[in-house]
Amino acid sequence: MEGAQQARRIILVEGLSDAGAVHALATRGGHDLAAEGIAVMPMGGATNIGRYLERFGPHGLGVPVAGLCDAGEEPDFRRGLERAGLGTDLPRAGFFTCVADLEDELIRALGVSAVEEVVAAHGEIGSFRTFRKQPAQRERTTAQQLRRFMGTRSGRKIEYGRALAEALGPGRVPEPLERLLAYVLGA
Image 1 (cartoon, rainbow, N blue to C red):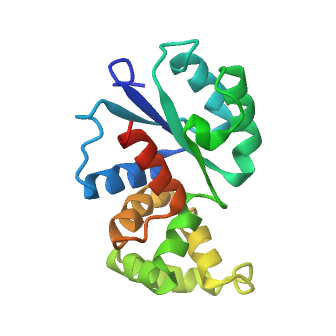
Image 2: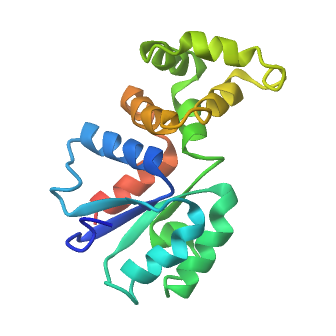
């Protein structure tokens, strides 16, 4: 929670992979979030939203907050926002929802072949091809396999969150990330 005490805004994200993607996209857009007084806080999971809103929101330090959540985590976020006095309308409160999760958003935005190129550039295409042959993976689409592959080794999601965000072309930023950055940087 270092840096949050001096922040003029806080972006709450579930984990380090989300934080890496937010930083990468902001940097690509010419923004240095820290220099602009914006702290990106990985919460260690969506269930911690209430604790972070309590500490930093209107009843805590009073720092304006925004963030990302996965569709499956919306109920936790709505409850946390309501308890913090921010209502239950996530976009109005500055919180934007990923369809499944951030990796899913990035894979869909880039397309499977571009994601495979990123995996190859990281020297893991052989590992991915081996992973695809596992019985549990055979019935999944390549996009589903890529998403699952990113969660199979410690640190891989973090590495690919940033790498996939950096690989996005102009006009390809997933809507939840685009809306979050517009909300935070436009304020």
